Length: 266
Image (cartoon, rainbow, N blue to C red; front, side, top):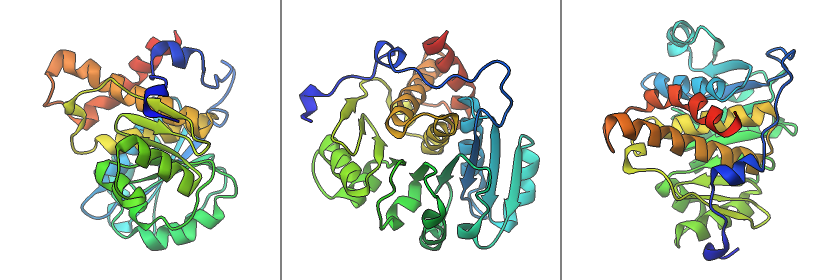
């Protein structure tokens, strides 16, 4: 699809593409279980941000697999989650998991992906951060969330929308990157909102977690990518109104996610 032909992500477009809605009698299992795999001794916050973002967009259950050094601290900081510390993150248990987010805060992604991706068995996944640099195979029914540098590592040189489409085709996955969402079948969406304030530490972890939460709820990868991208940007726009264009924190995006979601679904 040509850049000029790409539809813009707007509230009208998203309301016409509604997310799966659980029945009021549904329990937490019906809303989906997210597993976040990542972290390192110096980056436990990335896992925390991604996990909370998944819950903030409506996922019912959160599990975390991280390095042993930070597992106890994360379990205390995330009382809503089941947290497991293990040396071999690629062999973490997937039983009962509806969607996986792999990459936030992860420093040695190659063995994790090698152990994890062959066992997804049709589950959707979000591949984020350094995990993108170790991606060596297609990941159908999944979403890649690269920043500008990671996008070029995945797809080479060119304009961002061209690279997003190239990466989506190469990896058979949806791609959500700054300003664009691409699908492996060639569909493309533009995101014209947002501000420079989203370029802050931890912001990408929030995006990855939000997309993972929507996947766990039952959204298809392209839908989760579009909705997650828009909710992330909308949360930032809401903070601009109170904090200015720069200076808000990634953790502050978390409280705005359900408000942005409510504005689209009420």
